[in-house]
Image (cartoon, rainbow, N blue to C red; front, side, top):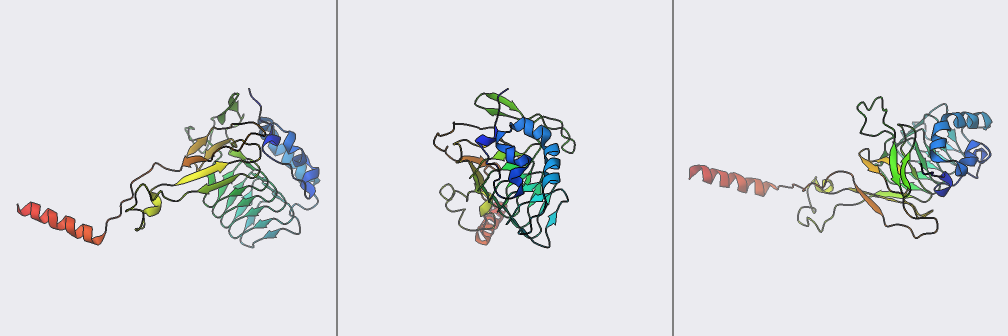
Length: 273
């Protein structure tokens, strides 16, 4: 089976107490091996840190922080966000409004926008995740999503990679950026200029990684798509953005009151004839 060394995607934390514990060796770890021992490694990190929540961290009073979460210096957690289940927020990381972070590693200065939900995901340093992004940790191929048993697998250049667990979200490398595109006005120029449904025409997410010229591997994006692309080698030019449609493209139906009256008149005339 091919190997994925996390150091090809992620930087280890250098600021604060996290750099001296198990997470300081993150770059040397192999992905499947790390996932297998993640719980034990996190217990070791908890035992070795002096302040589980660094004194310089800023946490809003409405945020919920789990008892086993490690928060580094100068981290900010905004309103109504939840960080739980052994998550790690490295120095300078930011968790935006109304986010849910479950069993995740956020690298130094990583930013989560508004209303983001990520689960069992490793996010690199200086990554930026835009609003309303979801990274699920289970596959939709499971018969019962409450009790997943299908192992997460994805393709890499050397073959099929097996994570060894049914719960894994993804790896988003250093400087990775995700975003959502606006509707393509050139495709439906008349229908995309007005009406409450104009944003439903076409939505996409962009996923890139500029650290190693590779696309980060992920088991689920947007809760529905599987990302199975890892390409290029260290030093190669960054790939083109990968566009993942969050839902099938649907025509935008915007009917004005004048059009409704015209249709009613045509029906009445047809009935009289």
